[in-house]
Image (cartoon, rainbow, N blue to C red; front, top):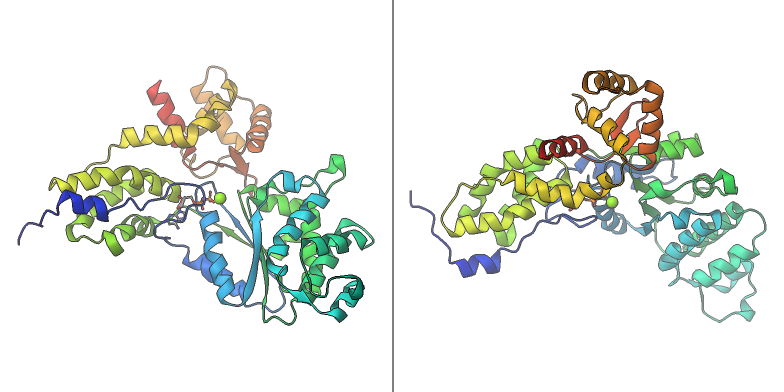
Length: 418
Ligand SMILES: Nc1ncnc2c1ncn2[C@@H]1O[C@H](COP(=O)(O)OP(=O)(O)O)[C@@H](O)[C@H]1O
Ligand SMILES: [Mg+2]
């Protein structure tokens, strides 16, 4: 066998742009796995009457946003319209603000629809007083919203029903309302504002009337519990998809497919990557963000090695993890108190830290590790606070998990550095 030909350095530099994309919502060069989830979405798009909506949850960096983004073209291709955005805390501050959010997003799709005269009468407008060519834009929706008597939910329902009425002569199958960061949705009993319940009530009601508006919500693992706490019918209303870390073969594909494909498919170039893949999979724990992060860091190193005819590259794990610690974890860690750190460190020492843990287990471990162990009531209370801070969450079986991927490993590294 001939040794592989060394490509000129100039050629490598031009051809091989770093394809990896560690960044919130950045489309990866290759979307690994997630076939079942996409299939599930396609199934929901086949509904004539919407009985099931979708919730996508999972830890930060697991790929919720990019998955939602890939649903968009899928929906359009099958004749659906797409409405959506991120839900910020401020858009969920009151019922009216949430209604405005929905109308603003809906208007992007409907403002090109010209409404006929008799439809205007049906909606409650007198056409002769309006422009000859009225479109169902935000202004018109807001007008209708304000004129409709009743609660915010009555008003919003009317606006949505009219939107569907106006779309009748288009050949749309329906509309997907896709909202990311939906864990920000909350009811505020103190202020008597219930935007989350409003959203659920309105969609349940219009879906019952046969209007094909499909709700797809993506957010952190607290999301589904929040929905159920607001309205118990959420249990039946949503198909919940828990996005998990990628398995070994999908993780390898996330690393190697971008290297093997297209402009990067220089013969011998994949070799060092194939050798590196198992270690990258291990270090990343299969979390997509970490895979992108490590591969991005490794890319120039591998390029240089190949330029120099070196085909065995090792991962500078310590250096990469230190950078990851600064970029990904340090901000969150800095916001915890000393006593919280102590508790989190105890959790990190549990065998089940990457899975789930109970108050009882934490108490037991703290007796082994600390001179001043934690009491159960104190642990429960602290886990509540850490839950609000987005560091842990309580799952449906009442057990807890870290809400930040591989947080336990980070904590153990901190101890190591000290
Ligand atoms: N299936 C996947 N295969 C490869 N990389 C992925 C995959 N899903 C997500 N990523 C990458 O992981 C990172 C986090 O994705 P993102 O959708 O922002 O996560 P989340 O919304 O869950 O926080 C991005 O850099 C993205 O490119
Ligand atoms: Mg996201």
